[in-house]
Length: 89
Image (tube, rainbow, N blue to C red):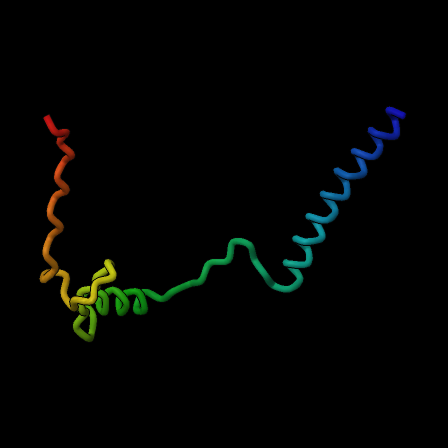
């Protein structure tokens, strides 16, 4: 009984390894590399940096994350502080 349990566990282990090895081989055959790095030319990098340094081409409108119907956040009045509850004497 104990021997059969041990042999089952061994089979499971080898199956896992086989599947993993197969997966790696299939990926290798299809040309997928797990550590694939794209080579980028220095000119491309410089161009990208320059375009970022210049700023956006069109003016960016300030985005209001609160759902206001007012177009600008600056015009929104601040909420009054809630008054603390004072028990009657």
